[in-house]
Length: 156
Image (cartoon, rainbow, N blue to C red; front, side):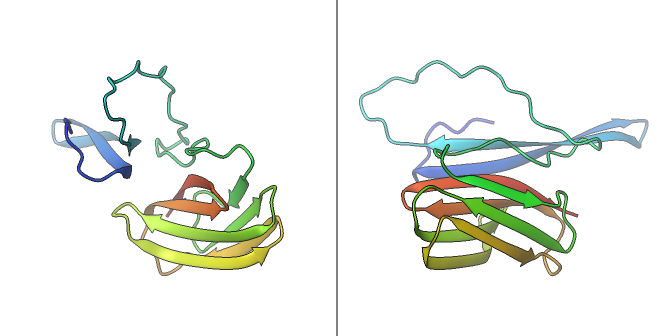
């Protein structure tokens, strides 16, 4: 895949499914997910590539969790169960009191759940109803004052 001229600055998440077939029989299937961050750096040349980090795989080859994807070591987010079927329990902690926005975004970039709370303390806990959502990969995005954390969630 070549993408040499993104026109919009932002985060781009994509998934590739690799299937191994032999004599018309599906032997295995693996899903790889990647994040591309398009930023504006005028008058600079690309830097060196970061070291390779293997994906975290579950026993069935599906990616069910990743490490922190964005810029906040101060915001902690935990959620369970993964993979989920009906309810996703989300717990957040951050150092400064203030507003928080929690979003669940599908792979097409559509927000399928969003909640915004003003003037919260440093703790948030909710159960998100996932029963009406189709199976697949979703992104749980948490935005606090100047900090964003994103995690991947698998719904079966």
